[in-house]
Image (cartoon, rainbow, N blue to C red; front, side):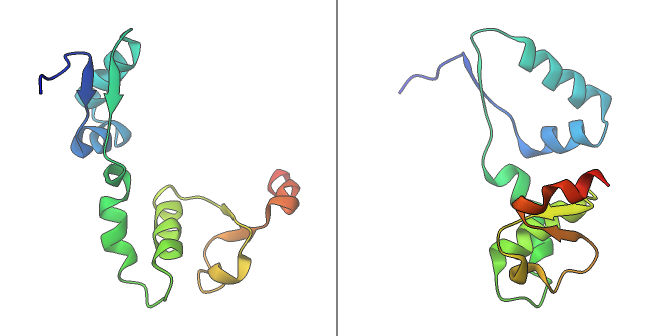
Length: 107
């Protein structure tokens, strides 16, 4: 199968570098985003890879919730929006809010 030169895969380390303010990685992504006709690809694990490792440290039974909590912590989120508040009661350093109570964020 022949590779398509219009398809570009971006490794996790470039994404992390860009979001950590590495100028070279940031400029690279900005350039790639500006190109017409190119399709950019990443692995769905690119963002979760390190977060999964960190989430495994929680003594909590639901891995998905632990990963989402870990990601919200990484981005220093003050709020985590969910329909399942009870699933997050063990995580105390973020405000857990149901979608219908979203207005609480404006305060």
